[in-house]
Length: 188
Image (cartoon, rainbow, N blue to C red; front, side, top):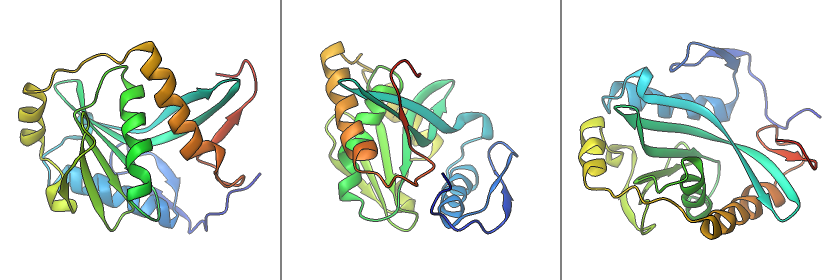
């Protein structure tokens, strides 16, 4: 099935150098990556793009993509989730994704629609900043990480967070959204 995004050609990913389909959403993703690289002090090796995340809600399974994880000295510290539309509806599933990606709490969660940005404390979910200028620099993230416990997520909490992601991101998604994949039994 083809997606519903207007393909405008191709562009080169600023993090990996890969050639990607050029869409409005991908332009916003690249804008975010450029800010991390040029204004926030991260190197290309600090940023992991397009991270697949498989979640389950009972027998139903699906896979989504998380835009970016930023690391300091090889340790994940900030997850960035892009999605068009309202930011407030993206807070809870983004926090859940950050808890699932590494099996422990990621300290900083960034939610953006490409124009507006909310920065969330990974532990509490509180908004700790707004706007691109409030995204932590690499040095600021390193200081945040030095104070963070990186507590593991329990199996019961992992199951609950996966159900939240499935509900918000997969269950109600558009069938033609190519960033989301509903999986059959046995698929990983």
